Amino acid sequence: MSDRMLRAGCDIGSASVKWVLIGSEGIIRYTVLPYKGSPRDAAIRACHTICGDCGVAKEDFAFTATGLGKAVLEDACGQASESRCLWRLCAEQMPNVRTIIDLGCHTSRALRFGEAGQILDIAESTACASGTGLFLESMARALELSFTALNQQARRSQNPSAVTTQCAVFAESEVISLVNGGESVRDVCAGIVRSIALNALTLYTNCQGRPPVALCGGVSTIEAVRIALARELGHAFIAPPFDRRIAAAYGAALLTPASDG
Amino acid sequence: VVLDDDEIRASSVLKARARVEDSVRDITAAVLEKGGVRFEEVRSWVSTGYGRERISFACVNKSEIACHARGASLLSPHIRTVVDVGGQDCKAIRLTPTGKVVDFAMNDKCAAGTGRALEQMAEALGYDIAELGPISSEAKHPVVLTNHCSLFARTEILRLLCEKTKPEDIAAGINHSVARRIAVLVRNVGIERDVCMTGGVSKNGGVQSALAEMLGVCFVPLGADPQIIGALGAAVYAAEMGARS
Image (cartoon, rainbow over all chains, first blue to last red; front, top):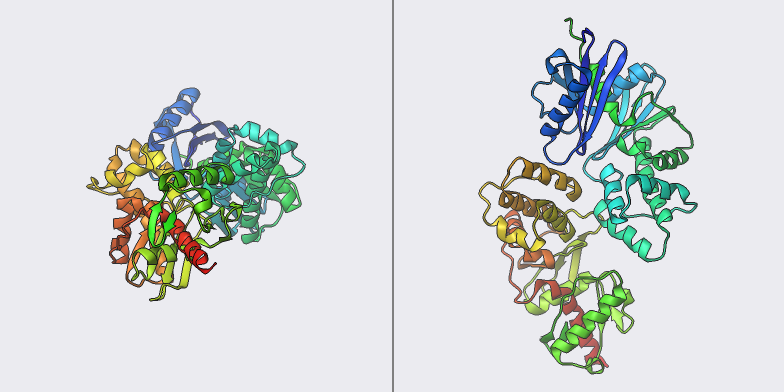
């Protein structure tokens, strides 16, 4: 492959590593690798996969690293914050979007853009698992459900339970008590999803968000979350023209300068 | 706790079951058997804790704050600050020289700085919560855990294990991180000596010594199981009621 515009972005999150390889025609290939343990090993492994799939060598392209583990790859040509990646991504791929909400495993954030695409405000939640993918994961574990099953259950509910505990550790006991107390699993699932949506709404409000809104990050792949949040916001989302999980990695790839090869 | 005048006749600790009523039935039977007392012989019952309103036979219920203060004062009359760290919450209580509560701070919204946080992190490390104290004493290079949230800290611990960090160094880091959260709360109410620590977390020597160092105090030993101090305080209230009637 001899695309002169070949470049990549790598988003090293707390639960998965995302690589996006782009060329002059846009995305060539991407991969999402969930991992436990060493983020560096996972990032290298995922890079091998993508290189093998596309028949390129790692030396053929430069990449920008982002995410919590952005410092672990020493051969990155640069590092960027997730916010900067999302800004670049929106500027190039969804210029009409005024607010992007990113719901990750470890961090959730909302960014508001101005008319010219500049970042006007950022609201982030980084210290607490409330409203994150990790919150959802511990709730799903407590109920012994997969994300798919949780999504299906939540979508069938007409009457979400009140899941009011913010702390993910304590909320685990709360949802078990709710189920033991006779609430249906689908209502409890909907309550969990609603709690995620309300946290996202707080971020949206804190950055003084405006429509049109786009939603990205692993948690946003769950349809029930999108529906609940759209209901809270009072309007629908712009569907991004890419996998929601790779937004930051895609933005990082776009931030990487094209080699003059 | 069953109190006979000022003496502890029997005490019992049970891991809470899903239903409060089940826990209450079992623990009551256990403590009566231990003390060799029949239910009818107990003059009055006072309840405390999260499920205190669900004990049907208790004549009154008292807050944990009040009970920890009473229990600690009974065992050591010069106590002015009680640091109570249980599974669900963390409290700092300041007392007057006569044992009255003047101020308190409590965290029950976030698991950081509670027994649940210790449990979460111990599990990630692959140890039982009771082992954290003992193994942390062998630490040579304690790590600093940077995450506030114990769920995030779990991810951090798994990463450290992958990097071949020694479990004892991580255990010391866990104890330190919990102690740091408690210290913030204690400083909020202010510290006056004597200071004691109650609740299940105080059984972890690592947390206790880290916290003592951070606060610049020595904890006064109470000479009783630190997990029963709240129940002991409730028993003191019950004894007063019994005496009055």
